[in-house]
Image (cartoon, rainbow, N blue to C red):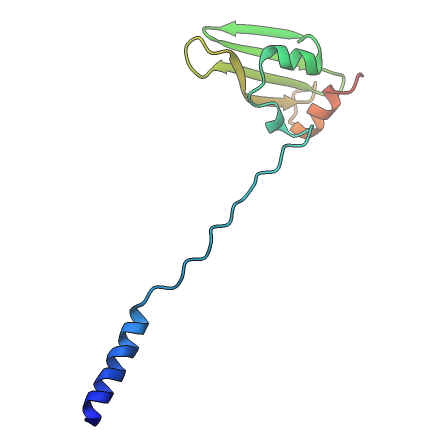
Length: 119
């Protein structure tokens, strides 16, 4: 009888060790909206939206079905590259480069903020 209790207890402990833990609810992470000077705030914009934000571009170049718009101020130069996600879709910003007028690298957020302010 004692052996059966020991076996039953051992079996119970063994099965308890194999049980899965209760699942924790998944945490939902809500991405913050980009700040006005952040580079990602420009991603997805159309050419018309860029012009409304920065004024007329200093330079534009079309190559195939892509478009490069360049905006300049005394502080920096911003190149926005626009591509269509599929045939017939509007061109949208997919990449942004910034630099100082000398050609040296500069902070994208600072450049975007500077272009938004009349110089």
